[in-house]
Image (cartoon, rainbow, N blue to C red):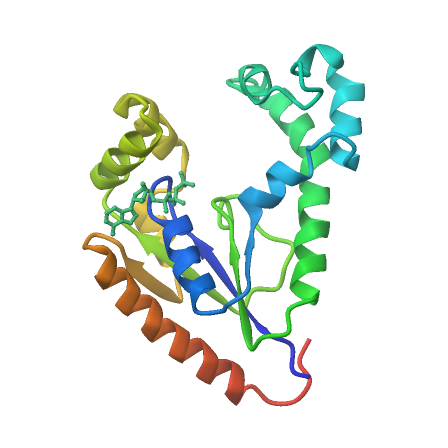
Length: 207
Ligand code: ATP
């Protein structure tokens, strides 16, 4: 069987990555979501969990024996060294799991969704990069409404991420998410046909 086409999906905070991924998933497309995997690899009993607890100590655990995410956030916030240390425990596990899942795909293409696809580079071979594009003011509006957080908090995150213009320079395909959900559905439908055709026209056993 031909290797499935790997489509990396990314975009800034609140741009609509989850919404778009869900539309692809509804069409039957396998979606590998780095955010979900990142949460799984730090669950109690997982290899990254053991390393994190050995390094940071048991005080970072909540009463349920799982990592206390808000304590972790406080620890790594504004401390680059600590964040790097944490990432050295989690990133290899996330990459291993994403590779494992992408090797299991038996569909012409798959979506690999990651907020930091462009910022932190990727260990996977991506055939296309799909960027979800939205104005920064609308990103802030939607994400703060969704999370019930202060717009200033979201704005800080927007500023820490890749600039909209720079992100678009990496894009092979772009979804504009500045209209309603039916516009989003239409754009996903079009890309779905395009990716199926691209996957079909690939020759031989590529890997
Ligand atoms: P994050 O980076 O924080 O994980 P995300 O990129 O996955 O966010 P979503 O959670 O999909 O973004 O979307 C952000 C919010 O905007 C959600 O509440 C979602 O329902 C809403 N949203 C997404 N697309 C649209 C749209 N076209 N019109 C109105 N609201 C939308």
